[in-house]
Image (cartoon, rainbow, N blue to C red):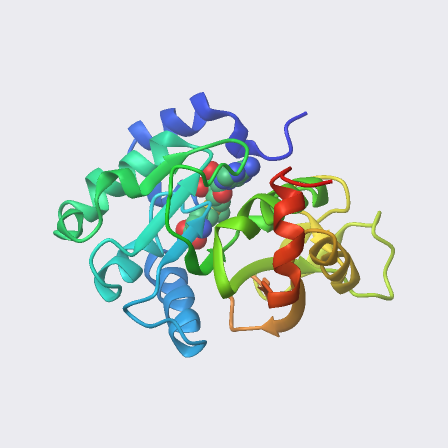
Length: 241
Ligand SMILES: C[S@@+](CC[C@H](N)C(=O)[O-])C[C@H]1O[C@@H](n2cnc3c(N)ncnc32)[C@H](O)[C@@H]1O
């Protein structure tokens, strides 16, 4: 069984062709688009920064970031080419944002391949993406992103948090939003310690931020590249043993 329904790329493409590119990625277009934008600006994102949107989807956040960041400074990867294409054709072009962000700032990848982008990123964001991923996939994402971050780079990601008093194997209901999460299937829940550990073995540190007014009870985690972790990036790239 695939780890989330977005791996059914034919179904996603069919939904996009049926005009559902906003709904497929969760809807609440203006609300959650605005929320992620306001959050990053409040946490230091400036127009000259370079931002990579991990699991950018149909550019719900992208339309906000593209308007704000200097020309060419917004980048995105996603599993689904059809979502990127819909975002660019149906959201960016009508808003004139294609003149601010070139088409080749986006890359469809199933394995967190950031290699097409040459310069490092100051900020990274994964909004409503780790909520759909296994811990092993999150680790691969962190490992592969670390070498593409600038010194002091920051990666914000949202997760569903599991109450530490509850076992991971029991479904957990989240309010607001009414989403039920699971330990072994999408949407996944995690303990704080899961993220702290996975960061520590992937070239990052993790700081729990928690509530940030997400309407479906997603919580924010801040991953940082520490200077003294730079050494491990060479290992992650396979350049030393
Ligand atoms: C709920 S949507 C969020 C999209 C976007 N971050 C936003 O806030 O609008 C989840 C996105 O994650 C993408 N995704 C799921 N698994 C992925 C993976 N393994 N690698 C890259 N993207 C993935 C999906 O294709 C989808 O676009």
